[in-house]
Amino acid sequence: MFQFDFDIILKTLPYLLKEGMAFTLTLTALAAFGGLVLGTLLALMRLSTLPGLALAATGYVNLMRSLPLVLVIFWFYFLVPYIGQAILRTERPVEVGAFASALITFTLFEAAYFSEIMRAGIQSVPKGQLSAGYALGLNYRQVMSYVVVPQALRNMLPVILTQTIVLFQDTSLVYVISITDFLGAASKVAQRDGRLIEMYLFAALVYFLISFLASLLVRRLQARTAIIR
Amino acid sequence: MSNSAAPMIEMAAVSKWYSPQFQVLKDCTTSVDRGEVVVVCGPSGSGKSTLIKCVNALEPFQSGTIRVDGINLSDPGTNLPKLRARIGMVFQHFELFPHLKITENLCLAQEKVLGRSREEAMAKGRALLDRVGLSEHAEKFPGQLSGGQQQRVAIARALAMDPIAMLFDEPTSALDPEMITEVLDVMVELAREGMTMMVVTHEMGFARKVAHRVVFMDRGEIIEDRSKDEFFGSPRSDRAQLFLSKILAH
Ligand SMILES: Nc1ncnc2c1ncn2[C@@H]1O[C@H](COP(=O)(O)OP(=O)(O)OP(=O)(O)O)[C@@H](O)[C@H]1O
Ligand SMILES: [Mg+2]
Image 1 (spheres, each protein chain N blue to C red):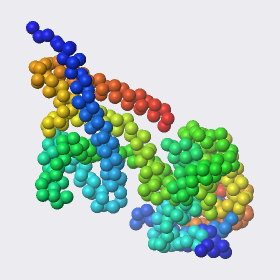
Image 2 (cartoon, chains in turn blue, brown):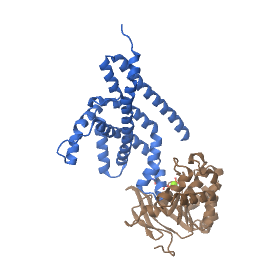
Image 3 (spheres, each protein chain N blue to C red):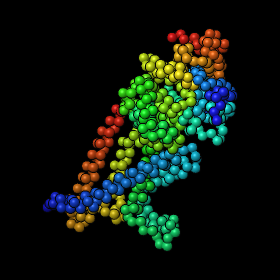
Image 4 (spheres, chains in turn yellow, brown):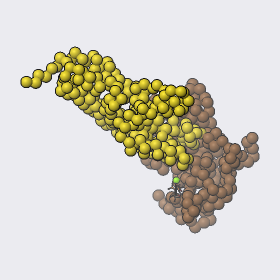
């Protein structure tokens, strides 16, 4: 009869957390930050009156949103060394490393989604706010960075965090380039010790708990900002 | 550079179209002298907001010229942000920055545009806040103040830039009646100190008290541009008479 082995989880927990979860959280945090910065720039490009900029940003966003993430991760891992080679004109493909490759990929991919969120956020700021900024003598860059983007971020914070939770789950896809994230670490143990059920159940529970708690937090935040507005 | 004999604001034959079929301003010509208070009134949709927003180039216009302190807005060499920094503007809906505290609202442009230090900007901001009677609200956010208080902060924010002229676009029309006076009092004081002001308003009491001239607009045209006494004494056009009778009826 099947015996559920709690010990295996307890024994490997330090490894799972220190190797796996640390990687997963680092990648999530860095990619969310990078994606938000790049996404905000893309949103500003899309809303700009220069047609070339708007078109380029729209093209980029649509391209990223039409590709499966796994494919992008996979292709990037193989392509980035050669792109680096072409740009830097080195003799050999540039060694990027799996972590850097994953970080770049997620940042570029998430930027497409964050740009849509930030575009809605920027458009949610009343036009009078821009007028007030310009009337005080601020220039475009200053109006955007001190008046519009901070309010857009604040208005969109719940959506941004929700997207980040999705990103947190999506980071498990790095298994295609053999990175040991949390799921990868659990998977390794499972294979090694033949404890598939325990490890995968535990991994599912951890992803669920973190995502669920985070979304509870988002909801509370939402209720609070609703009062302020 | 500034010519003290010339008007502070000079508009000559300003026309603006929102689309080829819709001309919102038709050949508007008027001026505001230094230290003068000009009230602009007229029916809703007549183009008052558009006109006043053209003065600090918040709205572009297609023909005519506007000079502020002798500087031509349409001149490609004109640094518009720099010019706007010298003209204060107060909006119907206050437009304080809701994510910034009152003090930060007062300091932002002083620091970023005029390059003042935080201490300098803060001192100026506090002095003006005191002047509009709101010192105790310095650390609050705009959303925590009443409409009248927010509008007084907005006036202080504009004054913090040491403007050469102030533009007001219906500064009291979004306020509850009991808050209108507190804002008008600040404006009256400003006018009496000799500030150059262009004020879009339907507050005829304010106009009678401090305006030097009244400009009446209808359908994008300046129909009357006359001294206050002339305007209230005997408006020449039927449209102005009709407008005044409507507005003074209640
Ligand atoms: N961005 C725009 N595009 C097209 N039409 C506009 C735009 N802004 C204003 N208008 C139109 O231009 C006309 C003048 O508008 P404006 O806001 O200057 O009038 P107003 O005299 O200030 O009116 P109110 O007393 O209602 O504030 C109105 O008919 C308005 O609908
Ligand atoms: Mg108006």
